[in-house]
Image (cartoon, rainbow, N blue to C red; front, side, top):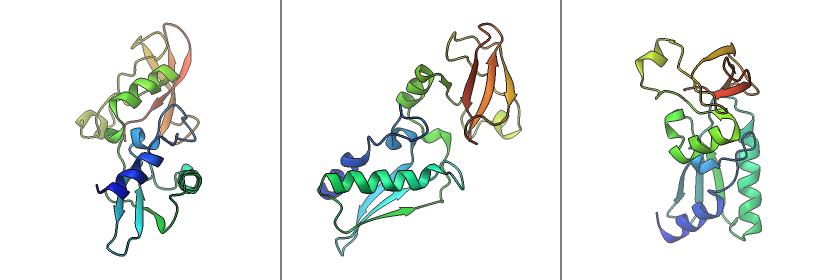
Length: 164
């Protein structure tokens, strides 16, 4: 990245996910690239966690507002890219730790794990007591990218960030 691209990246990388505010758009893997075109135009590329993700408008608004506040909004455009499709493999290890501390079990597998592809239930660790004696309650939690689980040891419900 050149100096201008780096400046833009650094200005927006710490914007929190509106649904999970303990992780950033960089840690989540939504912020893909900042590119300066020969014309001087800056394009910020973001990728949704899934098609139709309602947070995308908020990501765009937060990026625009942050750049405006920092005086970096001149000739900047945001482009949503769908290829390659976002995957939970893009979530950083640091973000996975933050998710667990926040009470959301991070993805238990990699997207290339054949068990995930074949629909085998993952071994999901309770973010509270760390037990793996857990059970799926609902395929969908508060958002489509999360499922609702219950720990059979501490009896607490929790969300699991599905492997995508």
